[in-house]
Length: 163
Ligand SMILES: [Zn+2]
Image 1: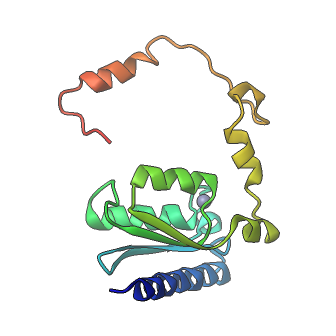
Image 2: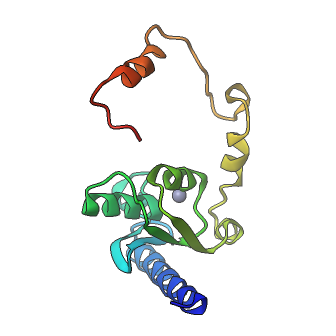
């Protein structure tokens, strides 16, 4: 497949992500965001923002699509898959991408486009870089016996599935 053909294919999947964004928004499920996960030319799952429909603030289009895709293939990793999103992923979804580990992420609209539509996540990007105590939300570390030790228990666990 030529580079030009690949670009056309990416654009077609992104167009589908935008259709899902429009669908989800019009059905009242949530904000105008859509996403799909594709692997080997097969659509594993489609998703759209369902924050309002499910009262779940984490039900962003990308998370919804990742959950459905992972359920469909029976894996917690999206190895060799591509995530297409109608908009640049927010910080939460960016993190979800690194946990799911697809081969690539393509997006259409930018975070600035989203901000213009009332979905400004620049504050979250700013907060990530701050020391927890400096964040605008109360975010305090308190030492609790055993809290750190569970990690050595994890690494000592013979039958653990590392990820
Ligand atoms: Zn998100």
